[in-house]
Length: 480
Image 1: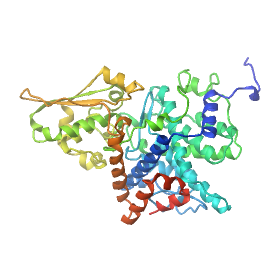
Image 2: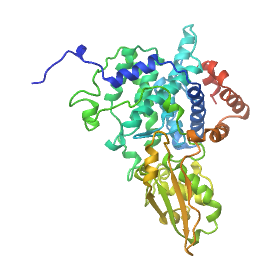
Image 3: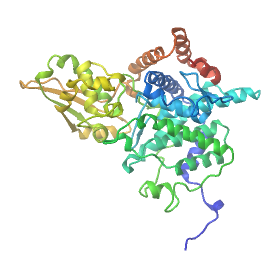
Image 4: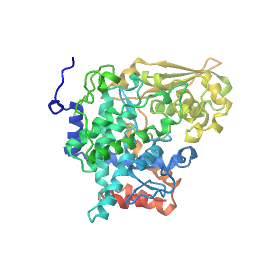
């Protein structure tokens, strides 16, 4: 017979307790963290605006029931939609993730912590407009930046030692967890309410990684994070209405997350929650491509002038990479859609070699029909460097190294071009941030009139002015 214990006697799982304590009581004092959070805000919004050029993305936007009106609703940047916070979170999250161009975190688990901005912005706007309707002061944008810092930290530290992908689970579970925690706090939740919401988020489980891998790679990977961040908002709002939680959602024998879905392994937080993740976040500055291939893209673009007029002379192309890249994006054979192509190391390299640049249109059907792409792919050999794989996991380096060398039929070859750190890496911040600003400005121009572009850009590049701006006023500037 099972030994029954009083629910009240059960100790709350340590991970739930630690995350709740962090979002509720941790004071963020790092200026670098807040500054980087502003870069995250700019870059992530810009990715969403660029994605709105693509009908496959915009078909997902708007209310579930057309014509729905929501008092004090959350605005969806780049549109005229005012939605309930749950659906707004999905809309924002879907847009910012669509082109695989927002920030990245690589560890035992991978992911994109800025995916949480969907839930953060939706709730911040809703809370602010609701407060104004009740005669209270709205939130200011410094609270959004703080929420970005904390969501990045929760998702990123969970990812350091807990590999969902090795269990066949998708990384967006950690988006759901991070969003749930920070938005419950933004809604005014107590520690108990935050724990209640978090426990339900873990019990929710995670989607499978099916849609990220052959033979099923598909567009769900572009809206999965929007789904996760919106679910975090839903669970937070339920907790605020008094919905109960589950103290041992992770550790309960037989029925908890660890035993059912994590092969009995302990889920851990390997370092104290502070500002480590935001300060080390990776930005996709130059190329919309899966991050393990970013340095390969840089190598290919550099080699472009040397080989573009010698394509028929190429004997083989050797790509030297690291274990994670080979496991995720080393693909041969047919590629069936943009989601398949932007997660193919060989396709990314071929585009860079052929055109000397890479943009989102290169993954679309029309561009993919260029026969030169597959001819180059067929000549590619991908090999692992043990050193690259070790440096990828080294917490003091966190490299994402790739190298490309072209060998010609006459026995000659190009230099072996090596990139250990992509332009968006912390080690290249001084070089990268001016380019990030340029990317943001260009993305704004795809969506807004020129005078509005100028207003938004000026505000976002003035840290002090942005921090004291009311959230509802900021969101109003993003209505098209």
